[in-house]
Every structure is written in C-alpha cells, then in structure tokens.
Image 1 (tube, rainbow, N blue to C red):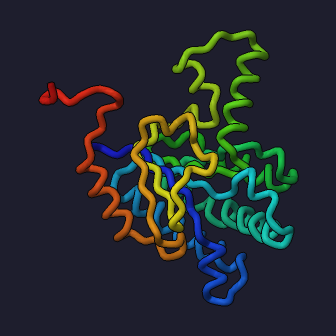
Image 2 (image 1 turned 90 degrees about the vertical axis):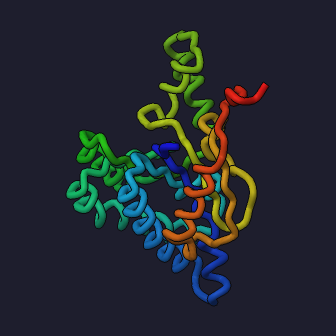
Image 3 (image 1 turned 90 degrees about the horizontal axis):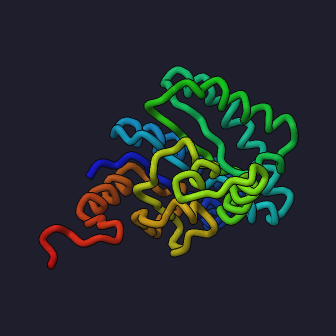
Length: 229
C-alpha cells in the first residue's frame, strides 16, 4: 500500500525533560530536532505529506513560562528553517486558529506559507493552536456565511486541511491512546498507531516499523475484501 500522508501527535516532550531533570522547554527543543529528522526521513521515503500536532488549542492553558518557550521555538523554527524548506521545495501549511498569536508570529507563519506555496510534491503541515472541534465549527460557520448546503466533499474543502491528501496513518507517541482533538473529521478511516516512545526518543527505526505494520494491515473502508463472502 502506498503511503501519501502521515500525521503525528508529538507527545512526551515535557515528560522526557522532567525525567532528565531538565526544563520542559528543553524537552520541546529536543522535540524540534526529532521533528526535523523525521520530516527528512518521510520525504526520503517518498511520502508526500507530513502533518504534526505541535501546539493544541488546549495547550494555551499551560503555564505562561512554557507557552512563552513554545512560542519562541515556533518563531525560531520558521525563521531558521525557511531557507531549507525553500531549498528542498517543501510547502509549509499551518493548521489552526493563528489569531491567538501576536502579529509578529503571524507574519512569520504567513511568510513561510507564501514563499513555499508553489511547491507541490512535499508538504509539511504544522498544527498550531489547533483543535479539531474548533476547526469543524469554523468550517460550519463558513458554510453558513455563504448559505451553502454542503456534502462530504464540499465540507472537506472548508477545513484547514482542504489542500492536503487523505491521512493514511496517525501516530501518537508518549504512551497515551487517544486523539486529543486532532484531525477528528479526517481520521474516519485512518490507521492508528500508539507507541510508548516519548517524542524526543522517537526515531527513523520506529517509524519504519510502523510503516511495515501499516503495509500488513487490510484497509477496507467499511467494505469487505473480494475474497470474503
């Protein structure tokens, strides 16, 4: 089976740092390093799209110090990595309600999207201040605003993921077994994988194992296989 789109809930940065008597921000910084390596690996494998859950709408309730550290990392990531994205023809897409962030952060995000919008073969989608319920509500309100009756296809085009391929795999690291308000509409027939590795410990080998297991699964999308009566 071909894999076009992998999505990852990058969980465990804080717990990884706490176990090592380091700040949670240090854990998030290590998580960014893993994100860069996993992104490179996905595109090396020919996977067209990687979506990562970097900052949920619920994360805004975390301590101010941690949020400030996360926002600094977001600014650094887009500012420092943009030349690499352009060099390697990687399109950047940001999911979520970016109005939470100040104008400086919004401008950095908008610049990354605009300068990479013409790339087509590789996409890195980053969910920032993202919550799937909020995404669905925003999409419903868009339809209401234009008095549009929607079906599954037209509704999908109102979501933040409107320009992305269907999600084949969702991976959650950190040992928890829930989606935590991530891609709820898009995950109807997505294959789910929950691993115990904390995100800073996740690596190419673990991803390769998940891909191998995925290829051994049968995806019927509610139907039956031809050889099953």
